[in-house]
Image (cartoon, rainbow, N blue to C red; front, side, top):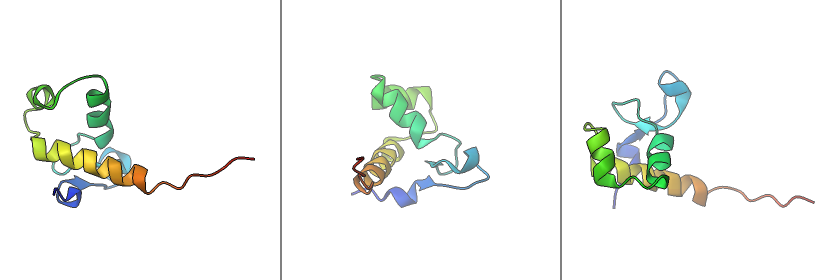
Length: 76
């Protein structure tokens, strides 16, 4: 299992604190956006050669944890 904490950081000095792949300015948001547009992982790596599949999977794991820990509020 991938530990996203080894690959994802959030530092206010980098991309205003958005979670990014460690050592890059590539945000988790960008990775999710590209995948949602139908880009495959191999295509994403071709577009950003300094990325690897482990980092992309770490971004997915991070996003899954964020969504899984969201609190759902019922509006009256």
